[in-house]
Amino acid sequence: MHLRKKGYILLLSLLSSISSYAHSKSLPIVDLGYELHQAFSLDQSTQAYNFSNIRYAAPPVSTLRFRPPLPPSTNRTEIQNGAVGRVCPQGEPVWSTEILIPFLESVLTGTPFNGSDDISDYPIVWPPEDARITEDCLFLDVVVPKSVFEGSEAAPVLVWFDGGGFVTGDKTEVLPTGLLERGSEIGKEFVYVAVNYRLGAFGWLSDGEGLGNAGLYDQRLALEWVKKYISLFGGDPGRVTVMGESAGGGSIVHQLAASTGVEREVPFQQAIIQSPGWYMQSVELQKSTLQDFLELLNVTSLEEARQLPSKQLITANAYQIATTSVYGTYTYGPVIDNTFITDLPSRILLDPDFKWKNIRVMTSHTINEGLTFTPPAGMNSSAFQSLIETYIPSISPETVDQIVQYWYPPVYNASTLSSETLGYSNPLERTSVFMSDAFFQCKNRYLDNVFDTSYASVFSVPPGVHAQDVAFNFWDHSQPDTELGLFNASLALTMQDYIITFLNQGFPTSAEDMAIKWKEYSKDGRVMNLGLQDIAITSDPVNSDRCRFWWNITG
Image 1: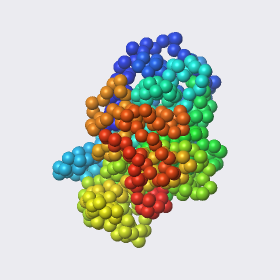
Image 2: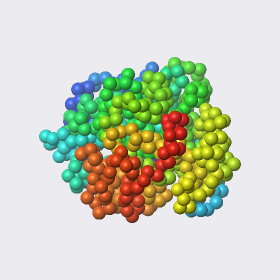
Image 3: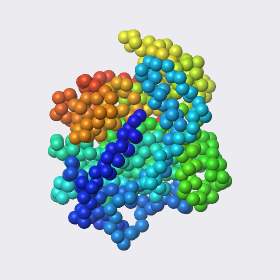
Image 4: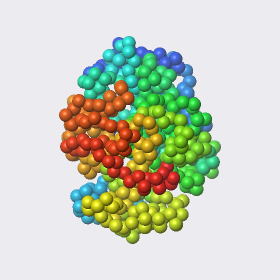
């Protein structure tokens, strides 16, 4: 939950030390054809060049708002150095800024939660003033070890899509320093790319009639940029691995599910998909959200909205996201637009004729995904049915009854050793397990069953909540962070080794003491359990029967 604040602090630390990197005319320049781009810095700890804020798309403003991006125009009048940071307009729901942390603390410490779960009882929290926020935000960063940039052998490429519920975040929220240092230590260097994509209404506004998923088009154009230009930085366009967590992971699933009409080939060869999550939206909800946005702007059409000043749109977007009424949701996200995405991703990927089964994947989720998105109302057993109806409004009454009575009955037996255990011991855990299954873990389950080569893991360091594993994946052991809570440096290094070796050789290995051999999921349906003190191969903890039920409902 504190990752965004942590990432921001790390960014400030990075910026404050830039003087030690001494921006200089001696830093290399890459000719991209449409522009000349110079490295912004050489990081002394990683000996890596940072090519910051490279434009990969034309400014998505005016008549281009809410639409797929266009390639950048040619501008060779001056050398670009990426000195101006770029962050896409965003917002955060009141439930996540005001209620989530105190409620989770009460649950984890066993103390009463005395706050209100009604968002109208809290003031609107606006995003912090940030001079980098602009609609003209479709930029990416390339960080490449000097030895790779100047060498003759192309290195594998890692492309990172940030999470944030499709409404918040940016390419600098996690920094690759720790991963790059570890890659150098174990002799497996790589090129790192981090991508901005449009958020909130700017990236995901839809009308239920074909408009939508601009953010997915952004990501696809960025991936095509990598395919075309990464060799200029020492990267191998034939060895690209995409990686994302939460909304970033969900984005990758949608890129895999993209219609063949979007692009004949997926522009990557491997994927690391962590805690993929999204809420599929009905046509009615899409239209309602669009109408609410237009009313906030005091216009009646998208054509009028495209003519408004940027500040007015940015404010309306932040307000609409902040006042998201359903706890655990973010207003915006991917939709079935019948062009980029033609059906639920689960149905597309599970189709026997799915084209990309040969892509190698690593998947992961935390052991307690749903708790972060479970509202305080979930503590009351009587609220369970109404919560289901709230999160899945299009579901039939008969199916709701089936969920309540058959799939998640009020039988609190998680503490027993019986094979009949349902995985929860009280009403809150019941709701949390439902949230985990329906919107997160079951997506991992079908991914592991779809691909010919899949390496699956479960992060179980207590409390095992959503996004807790990201700090381990990007841990910088040269600057130990004392705010990580329960932590094991050897586990973090092992997890980094698994990522880095997967990039380089197509299968994860590590020489750390904690490490064990990672078996493919397809061999026997078992997963790597990443615990605080040990790592072990275990049975997949996700209920396969419940997941088959959810695959046709939540995608």
